[in-house]
Amino acid sequence: MAEEVQIEIYGQTFRVASGAATISYIQQLASYVDDRMRSIAATSKTMPVNRMAILTALNIADDLFKLRVTYEQSSQLFNTKADYLIALVREQISRDVPQNES
Image 1: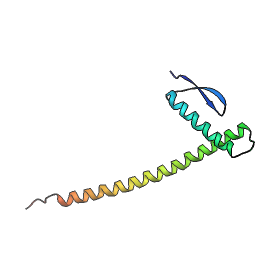
Image 2 (image 1 turned 90 degrees about the horizontal axis):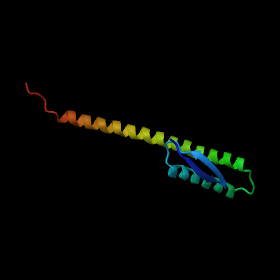
Image 3 (image 1 turned 180 degrees about the vertical axis):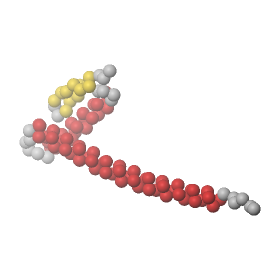
């Protein structure tokens, strides 16, 4: 059963269910969001908390989307290189196999 975890983000306390995650992981997430909100707050004179939360969510979503693109590009490059290496190995093996003499 999921435990409830008390977290604090930008001075507000929340209780959330941990689900399958560890309490430590949930606290790390909360700390990350809190840091990002404080970073945004530092760049603006006055901003309502709900607007700051939306900007924080958009910034984190932007990071996620950029990481997805990078992951997909890296995955495609890896697959291309792996296919090339497999083809080289197969070619070398086929050269090294002795032919049956007739």
